[in-house]
Image (cartoon, rainbow, N blue to C red; front, side, top):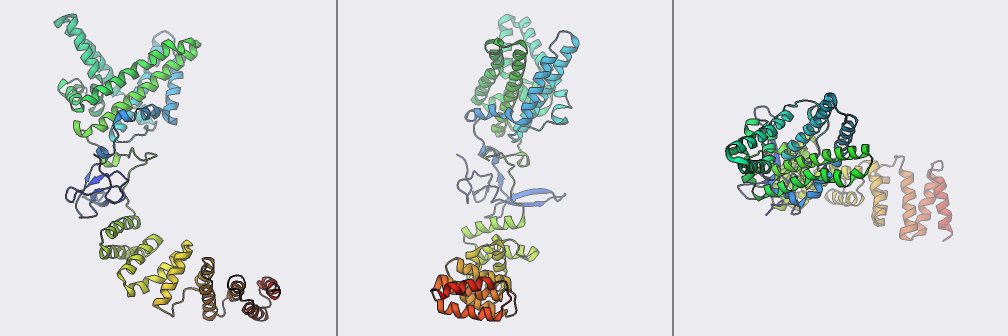
Length: 481
């Protein structure tokens, strides 16, 4: 049964605390760096503050037989598809007889096999995306290719030798056993890069046994994948022109080779705990993520504080949450509106009046910058309640007055505009404040008489202001009422 995050019940967990038995997703776990190099990362339980155990690969993996369609989609990304097409074309172009064409076809086959090895490796490590095409994946270190050839040769001679010792039946049995266990040998070879390990029955038989019946299911799929190009070539594409026939046959071989090695890599990943294969968190990419994005914990101080304090709030540890936010703010101040909002809400919960009066203006400025109208108006009202002499900066006060009218608090808006005029009598927005008051009195309050008085005063005091045309037009409307 899979583990789900303690605080995000719809998310599969990547860590499990062995002490409090709580499971966490990457958003909730608490990463810390240290070690001799200062670059090592440990992951701690945000609840009991002890080191958690990574269970990501085992907990998030879907059995391979439930995602067969994904294996067939794997080679269809731009890079692997381009490689398969180019190699298939080259194989057709050098399909003639003779040593040189044969050597060239061998090189083409080796490049495809080398890329398939890279696919198996990256998949086994937990990255389900095709590896990039570069010198490392297709252009160097072909030793493994020759080792796989040696593996086939050794298997062939083992079958012949068994025939000499045990007769044709013995040879057949050894051959069948070799075919059955060949995927295990290839997995061992690519995982360890050691040919002696790959041909050691104690190693490859043990690997197949530890995987269990899942190995037989994998072998069945691999057998189907192996014979698919021949079926395609014999019954379908053979009806096409020779060039198309050869091209599609080679393309199918490349395609099914890549699918097969990706499948073997996934089986290693799925059964990594059974076979003792190490999957590192740093290499792992969550297969349940929609785009297979890298699974990375939150390391940004603000984002991490938001995640940690969300857990603390759910557990009722409000004082701890306040303290953690204050520690972060002491270093970099309040620049993030979400962190400021969390702190403000916690102070309201704790009824910490003194801290609220200090943080309220800071939070108000952040809300205004973010354009959060309703929250800004509410915080402004709360700040006024705590300090009747509270006055934000002039542009912010003017903006709040307009927002109050926009959210239906028209009378409060008039009071705020009046407060603005009284506090900043020389500000260049004062004429506009008077005009807004007249507008609200006309359109929202329904008091044309007061609006008329305000407009007459505005026109008399500021005859040259840009708002005059609007004021005179509004006065005509008011006079007609």
